[in-house]
Image (tube, rainbow, N blue to C red; front, side, top):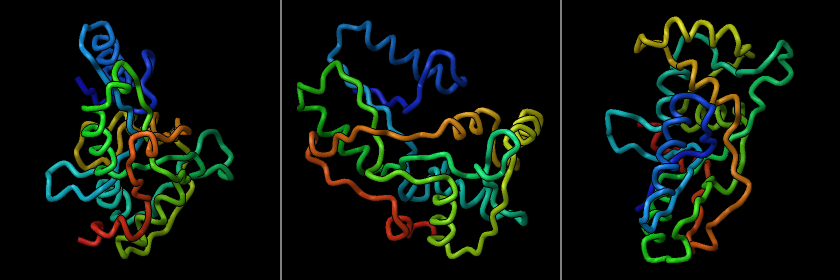
Length: 201
C-alpha cells in the first residue's frame, strides 16, 4: 500500500496536515507492506484538469491580479519578505517514486520525504513563474498576519486567492534535505523556467 502524504504533516498542524498525519498512523498500525511518500510542493503540466497544480494556481490567483504579487513575511520587518524556502518537485518524479517502490522490498514500512534537487525562496519562485508565464509582475512585501485575518473572513469565496491554512503552511517553508533519487535510480527533473513552459498556455 503506497500512501501519498505530504511533507510537513503533524498531529497539531492545519486540518490538511492533521488529516494526512492520521492516515499515516492508521496505515502504520496495519499488517500491510506499506510505503509512505511525503512530497514537497508538486509542479508539472496539469494537462487541462479542472484543479490546477501549484504553479498554475499561483499564476492564475496571484500573478494575474491588478495588484503586485505578495512577498509574505512574518512580524513587521519587510527585510524577510519572501525569503522562506521551498523544494518544488516535478509530478513525473513523484510518479517515478511510486512505481519504483512497488518492487523495492527495502522501501516497505518506510517513510520518505520527497523534494526537488534544488531549494528556492518564495521570491525566486514567484519570479521564475512570472518569467515562464511571460508576465511582468511587480512584487510587494506583504505582512502575513493581517492577510491571515482577512483570509479567515473571505476564504469561503472562490475569488479570494488563498486560505488561512495555506498561508500557515506556506510560511512554515517546505524543504527536503535528504534526496533519494540515486537510491531509487530516478533522474531528477529540476524546477526551471524550461520545465515551467506549460504556464504559457
